[in-house]
Amino acid sequence: MELDEFTKKIAGLFRNTAPNLFNAKTELKELDEWSSILALSIVSMIDEEYDVMLRGDDVKNLKTIEQLFNVVKEKSEKEND
Amino acid sequence: MAFLEFKDARIVGISAAVPLQKFSNLHPDNQTHFSSDYSPEDFVASTGVEEGRETKTLTTSDLCFEAAEQLINELGWKRKEIGALVFVSQTPDYMMPCSACILQNRLGLSQECYAYDCTLGCSGWVYGVSQVFSLLNTGNIKKALLLCGESHKISEYYPRAPLFGSAGTATAIEYKEGAKPIFCHYGTDGSGYESIIVPEGGTRNPPLPTSFEKKWDGNELLNGLQIHMKGIDVYAFSVTTAPKSIKKLAEKYGINYMDADFIVLHQANKMINNAIVKKINFPQEKSPSSLTHFANTSSASIPLTMVTQIRDALRSKSNKLICCGFGVGLSWGTVAFETTADIVIPDLVEVEELS
Image (tube, chains in turn purple, brown):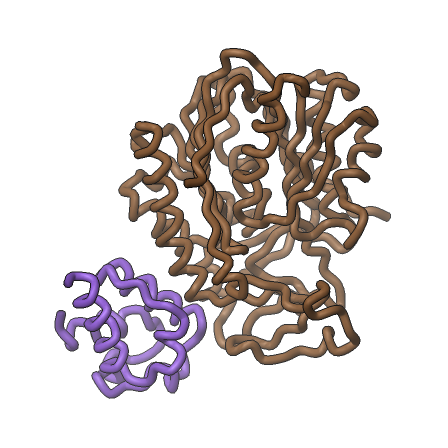
């Protein structure tokens, strides 16, 4: 799985935030559009696209897109072991 | 393994009653408690709940009473023959006594009636079904009522939660030798008890004047008597557990769930329900939804969906149904059974506010 593609998929869930604001270092919770419902959309997208189920604690202390990417990657590798 | 199989009884009727009064999530008034961090449009797009029914005066037993009256009358059941009444709700009329006792009297049932309450929510109807079937199995009780519902009576102290609607339902089940079996699977995970919780008002945290103070729960400001929910954990639980329960039941009893005419899920929210249906590769159009107009009605949601969405289909022929409830507890269950075309399903009852 690729960070670029992952970032694009996250960006696609935001309706009112310009796509050029999204990169590996983007802090999702700092975006004006961030909400608990968007968090749920992200969890749902990751479940569907990457077959990884996040828990509340995985998202709680999260900052950047890259951090989220690494959590998903780690969980995905663990499941495929 | 919590698998159960019952013979010699069948569901003969289902009814539902809702308050006449509606609330709108697309055009909310100032009584809706929306979290400050998202818009009504975003809420509706992801939950699927455009509107719901609400009440300021009707209790759960009031709604279940209306549903039961309609059903008993259309079935032509003699009230003295109803030997059991199970009431399932997380919003009973009183802390004590249980609402089933009040309903026994109000419905004019015999004093030789087995009646009690069960405090389950989203899994309540599927649990209640097995309770009633097991009571009928002995053959001594011939007719029984399962009443499931919630009333989120709104007030100054209890603001409307836009995800939840109020409804009462009645399911009539009777003893019948040789009826086709019903297959059930149940599960529980109490480690998730805080995922959906009303934290105050019980004996762990008794009601105090401070119960009405709003506190930040990580997502929104809620008082101690409102429903607190960890959305992501509930999503993860539901989308993982419900498909597994359906598959386990199918495997245990050699049922091909793809042959079901309908899979009726507890109506949690659109995102969760669509994900569950997708995970089992079942056609979305055969998994009816009442979320748009009735919101999440907890233990009422499965029978309410049958009454409002697939009534004609149920009354036109026999149908293979799989019903799955999952949520608060955490608790879940799945039942598979066949209905017959003579099933009695009255019109949806709309109940006026008490004056």
